Length: 146
Image 1 (cartoon, one colour):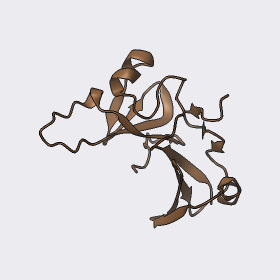
Image 2: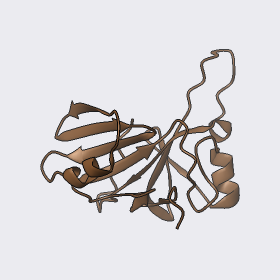
Image 3: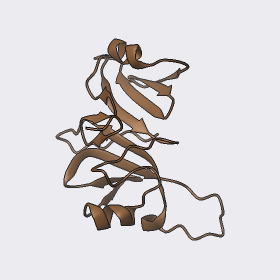
């Protein structure tokens, strides 16, 4: 497995869902910042965003963006489109402004917003800005939006 591989419901690069916050902090070298949300600590580091449960102290979602070069199934990364997903992996669904692949639980995508209001926003042609892996829940809950 490459060091930048994305695995739905499991890992992005060397970071794993379920790892304790203190273990995560041993990997983080350099500057980072934190944000407190309801029952969650969010840690921003380089191209990564980690969502840590305040109750369990474990990472339950990992999000990448910016210059992250890793790929899901070796095909889909930052800058890919929903059209690329459909052509290379399969059907996708919209779930409250994030996009999932029903056959691959535990991964979702957020699309880049366009700044030019005159340009038509075509869902399947907009570039992916964020990719998240998360612990899939039995209740069908999706990932937390960035």
